[in-house]
Image (tube, rainbow, N blue to C red; front, side, top):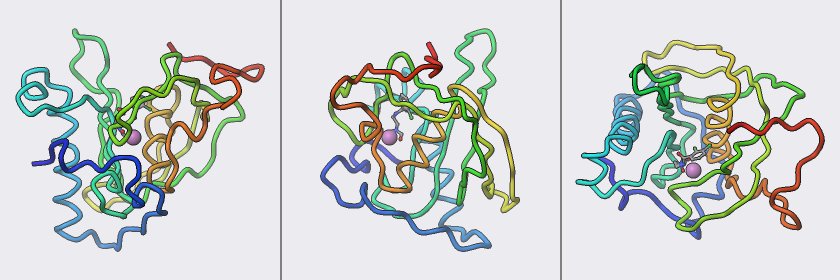
Length: 187
Ligand SMILES: O=CN(O)CCNC(=O)c1cccc(Cl)c1Cl
Ligand code: NI
């Protein structure tokens, strides 16, 4: 089971590498890894388990954060509405690729955080508001989906990890809250 001790932190060179595409058909090892990554997200979002296991909450995880330089990500975005337990996006994605994106940019009003960064880094992380994404799912089936707003932001944070990019690389050093005209701030 993945816990915080398995997550590498800033300074580990793996976080700055471009990860390797996963070989298809998926190996049992890569399928199991994806399952463990998803289990971590579930545990991290469960108050009892997160407390028991000492987990920081996360809505996404990328294999390089486990010191595994493979293009595998897991995302589990809760609906945020306690009435509706269904997550708005829950998937393990192999070889995810952004095929196209909106001209419209967006950022989270609260900024971003990262399990591989043991500090707060304030500021707007400007990303694409909408993306068209292809990936291979855990069954080996090629998927093509369109995402927007929070779900699109989370997936871009994870794909950045596959390319050695950290969320704070996008923050304006002079003025972390500088915004170009027309950037959507998602609260
Ligand atoms: O790479 C994944 N992590 O580091 C997990 C911890 N961060 C988050 O869950 C998180 C928090 C805020 C905004 C975004 Cl976009 C994300 Cl992804
Ligand atoms: Ni991260």
